[in-house]
Length: 293
Image (cartoon, rainbow, N blue to C red; front, top):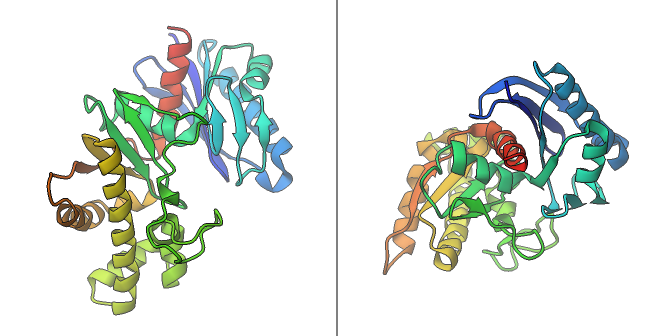
């Protein structure tokens, strides 16, 4: 059986799998990144995890697909920068290829998640769409013709750092009024003093304070998606990440807001992504298969 190894590296944990050509995950595991020990330790954990999965595969894997956070130079396989992990200019593809002796594809985690949805998930056949994971932060993948668009510097899709409330709350990026400062799961929890899922439930139950936080999150997200749609004209907006688990409680009021904001055209369809937290891992598997044709 032909197999590949796929890894999705997050800020605090990693998800890894051995995958078949059709995207079937034959073996999955999770590990912490060990970022509290510094970027060199994270790199060692990634390489060790990949080697471990390769050793556990039923037959020797043919390639490795690796999705990493931050700014990524996909073409050169370099992890350029990650604030969460603290690394700079890590030649990830070269390091992994040397350790495993396999062809290696390296790409940005959210764009890789967009690829996963385009090939194996809710974006199949959509062509041009936005994949917007909303969790600890807010990000986006611009998918054009079924392929993620990295931009000139590998920084496309930073939807969370669109300033939609000029002079508003301070964002972790240093700007004020970013979408991420209002609509991310962590921002909702911080502003309401309770987990985001409780904020939604209490807002629906009539809690005025929770409703104010939730309404502001929806409004800022709708503003960002309106701006993105006016610029890119996607066919579809796919919402992923932890907040998307709210399902219709998120998509319903968001669609209502978008319909009010679009006065001379219809908004794109809004749906929940299909692959959940496996999107980037499956996208990494797709990248690995492409490495070997």
